[in-house]
Amino acid sequence: MEGTSPRTLGQEEGKTEEIQRLAVRLRGGAPSAATTDWFWIMVHAYRELTISLMLARASNRTASVIIFDLWSNGSFQQLSPFGVVMFTILIALVSIAQ
Image (cartoon, rainbow, N blue to C red; front, side):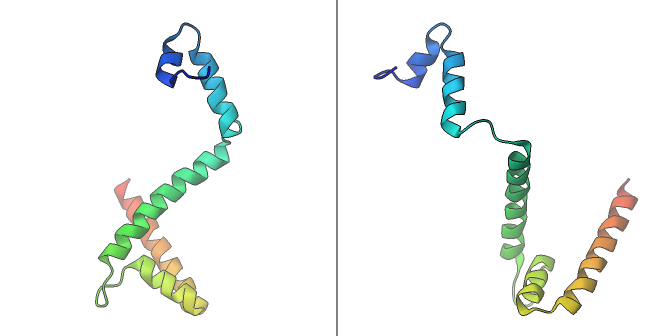
């Protein structure tokens, strides 16, 4: 196996299964469903966070920036109703869309 590139090794007959087993062994086994789900959610959350940060200005604060500010300042009494209102609006929009 030494001295051969993966492309050459994969072209040999019957070597693709060996390459797949080696890849799984090098990764430390197949990832669990929870790990892949967590990764999928984090990728989408990161994308939404960067978009909201790009849109946020001093005169135009997005909801995620407001939530972060309230959380970091410890204003949980204001944060809780804001979350409930956001959730209610989201449920109403989803109900209308269906």
